[in-house]
Image (tube, rainbow, N blue to C red; front, top):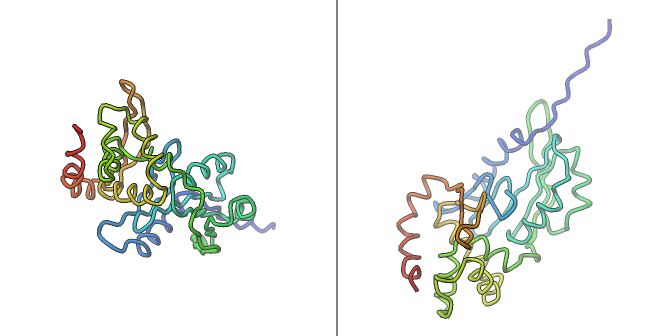
Length: 234
């Protein structure tokens, strides 16, 4: 009689995410305004999990069931925006990912051990040197970007300008490190919402779908409006 083969547990996105998200919440939520956001929209891509505390840290999951055909484009987007980027990899793809991503990207290995997933940090993420001012500016809502100019004394651009025009001015006048701080503050005030999909209406880019977390969003909405309202008609 032939012995039945033991089934091999292959990690999937949901298996890794179920372990990763609680791990990040426990480790990185230091204040009641810090956020761990799933499926955070950033321009043309969505990072699997984003941590927003004293920094912006993106975590991209590549399970044993995934392929790497989109990773290059995804990583280019993430590196334009996040202060830190970490790849959370299944054992099948770990070696290839390790050899192909920049050395400042963090690496976590997700392994299936006795039908459960364990996650081990293999390489700690270092500060990303590839952030881009325009990418950061484009993550802001139009009113937020205008506010960034106003608090720095730039009043030659008004709310009548398009979002694209305002983003370009912000990118040209505000340093990357300052923009990263402003974006992080804006995301916290929104309660975690970002761009999932954008469309152009009347020549102006706008958010057409939000991933705001309702509990944080309702708590911070009044504060957000108070911050931005002086600039809406400037």
